[in-house]
Length: 408
Picture 1 (cartoon, rainbow, N blue to C red):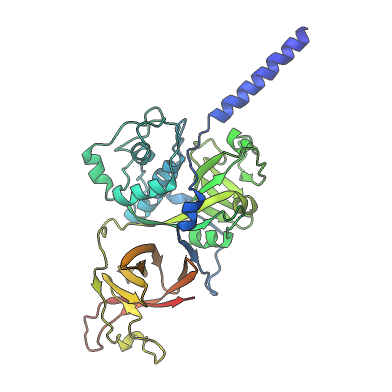
Picture 2 (cartoon, rainbow, N blue to C red):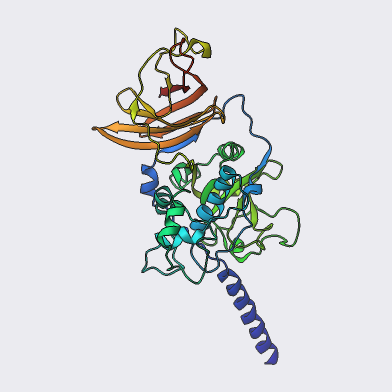
C-alpha cells in the first residue's frame, strides 16, 4: 500500500511539474482568418540569376537581449515591438542602445475588456504601428502584471517617429498545405529584412524540453509532433544556416530559452508549420508623410545615364515625389529615392471604379525585382538603376529611378 501511495505521489508531482513548466510559456498569436489571408496580395521576391544568397546569415547582432513575455498573451507585440522595431531603429539611428516596448503595442491594441492572457492579430498590430509607431522601452516599460496602463500624450508624440510604412504578406498556408519558399526567406534575411511569422508549435517546444539547453551547440527544432493543435506563436526570423539546414528565430521566452533566447527551426519543420509570414517596410524617421502627389511628365531622360534605347519608352523613369499611371489600372508612386544608399521605395496602387487600393510598398535596390500577385494577374517591377534624369543640357538634373514594369 505504501509503495502504491508513493507511486501516486511521484506521478502527481511529475504531472504537476510538467503542467507548471508548460504554464510558464504563453503565446498570444491569433491566426488571421483564411478568408482575410486570401484577400491580401502576396509579395513575392524574384531571385535574380546573378544573386545567390550566402550559405548563412545572421541579423541578431542588431537585436536586444531576448526578453520574456511572462504570462501575458503578447508574443505578437514582442515580435513587432521589442524585436523588429529595435532592429530597424538600431540600424537607422546607428544606436545599439535602442530598445522598444512590447507593452506600447499590446496595451493599446488589446481591448480593455479582454484578459491580459488574450492574444492579438497581426492585422491590428501592423495597422497600429503604421499609424502610431512604437515607444522606446525606457518610456513605456513592460509589465507582465499590467496590460491596462496607457501611455501619456508625451510618450505618444515621441513614438510617432518610429512607425512602419507598411506590412506585406510574403507567404501563407494555402489550402491546408505548405506554400513556403525557404529561398525567399534566405533572400529577404540576407538583404537585411527580418521576417515576422505566426506558426504552430508542439508540447515539447512549449515545455522547453527539446535538446540539451545547457549545451553551446545550436538547438535545432527538427521534429513536430502535431500534439498541440492550438499552440500558435509569433516569432521573428533573423537568420539561417545552410549547414544546419535551419532558420534562426528570436523568441520571447527569455534568454534561458534555447540558445540564449534564440532557437533554430529546421527548414522542413519551418515549411510545414508557418501559417503566415510578413515583411515590413520601415518608415524613414525623417521622411514620414512624404507622398507622391505630382504626376510625372514623360520627358526625355538624360543620355548620359545610358538609358536611351529605341525599344524603351521615355516614361520608364520617375523622380521622388511623383507618380505615373501604368495602363488603366495601376498607379506607381515613388515616395523615397537615395543615390547614396542606392535604394528606392515604391507604392503600387490598383485602380478600379475610380478607387485606389494599395497593393504594397516595395523597397528595391538596383537590379532587384518583385512580383506582386493580385487576383489572376501578376505584376513585375524591376529597378534597373538610379541615375540622373531630365534634359541633357541641365546640369542640375535630379536623381531618378529607372524601372521596368510588366504584367502577366
